[in-house]
Length: 250
Image (cartoon, rainbow, N blue to C red; front, side, top):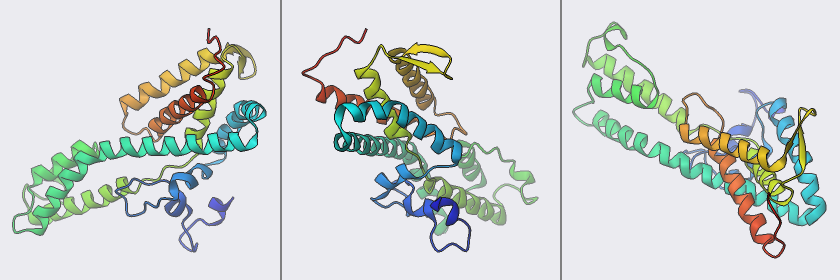
């Protein structure tokens, strides 16, 4: 509700800039975002899906552990998911930042980057095919064209660094992993119709997220590594807590 209430240029606060999770390299990053991003969502469908899963699996865990222990588990899973997401984000950004710094130094020096260098940067990191001969009606190594391209690169570069991550999905994946570990043979009804054991649903869902995290497909705006990280953190915690009470997974 706060996200919708404080939206627009006239608002005194930008909820996403202030409370969503940003990369460490972003000027918008603040330490509290590691927690607060879990309480922001993109739309009603986003929060409904996360809260439905939290109610389905989390209510069972809360009955077993108690409210305080469950809350601790939930927050730690979300925090772990955020840290793993930031680590992989940094790994992805590192080559781009290094190449941009080189272009920036050249732009500030006496010899600016060539059109070819600028175009290759855009094609490599933005997946943007450029035909310099048709941009601004210019030709290669035209000073006006190169200045224009570098400005476009800077704008897009800042947008990528400042991309916000929101949602409770990482923490919810930790809850799902714990439920699957503790109650592997419990039947879950997909769309309330199709029964499947929790262990198979968990394995399939985790494999699906891991595959697309590794693929890192262009245009995918889902924080896959946060999902994978939340599940791994949740699993490690519940295994540690449950060492003296082993269960037969199969």
